[in-house]
Image (tube, rainbow, N blue to C red; front, top):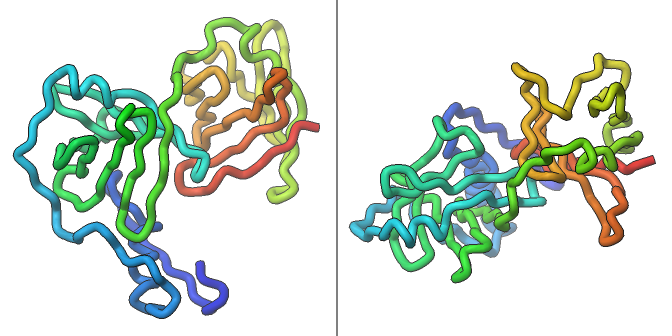
Length: 236
């Protein structure tokens, strides 16, 4: 949205590697050229390369990467000696093509991934927009004692919505406003809940990431789905 110009740009697509935000910014650059100082650094043509990685080199890039910008994570995984980028679903991964040291392109696109030399951070360059992801430990909780601290009531002023997390019969439950409760730990079979680390989990439509201070106190959480920026819920 560009409210200062009374303009909204809407793009529809059904391919995992598309970047509607970046493409919308490219359109906005054409509509309002005087408002954009930074031009796209990525050529619109698909990038090809003959570079190859050793198995050990490929393994060093693999891992889970998180961004607070859109409250979402991406995985880099090794399959058949090649690297793939996905959102947690291996069936929707895109192959990464090495084009320079610590730099890759998503195959058949102009989207670039630039890793730091220690491979602890990656910047995904869509052209007019860039998102920084940092590597994190995806180990999920194994015991109730690791998640019971999240019990409490959380409220969002922006959504005027309350999320309540509570213990019942040695299980952890989530209840949104007056909707039905759902068990979030241990995760029942057939549930859409997925713990992606000890401090964040997917609830079927969005990712919740708790904000825990240095003393272990839970301040609240952010929720988002990769398209919606993290919305803050404060612990009451």
